[in-house]
Length: 144
Image (cartoon, rainbow, N blue to C red):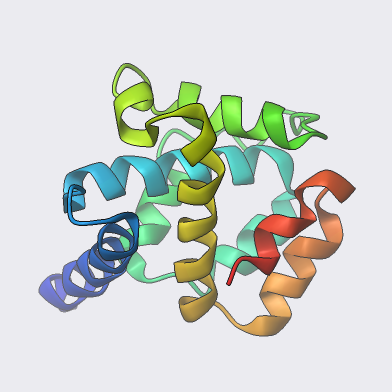
């Protein structure tokens, strides 16, 4: 087992997110944003879909995804984008408002995470996630 390799791939993912967020963002800030997005996503997609997504994530991100996960809880019913954005910012805890910035920028930052995620996960898996998301949230998987 090469834990340094796993850490490198995870840090590479976070560095890509930080770069796309802008020069003011560090890997720590991008890590909190990624964590928040992944945790809210796992709360609304099925266990089966989560497991399929996890199988394609870099090892370090797998641990982020499952950290604190209670997969026996029913999925949250988030149907609208504004509720999703609010849940992501709240999941970030106290740094949420500064990590995500102005309300007008929050969706863009969430879309950055999905855009980078699409580089690491197969197109078919992204389409599977898109298929199970509520109509208002499907655009997250279309981030370019």
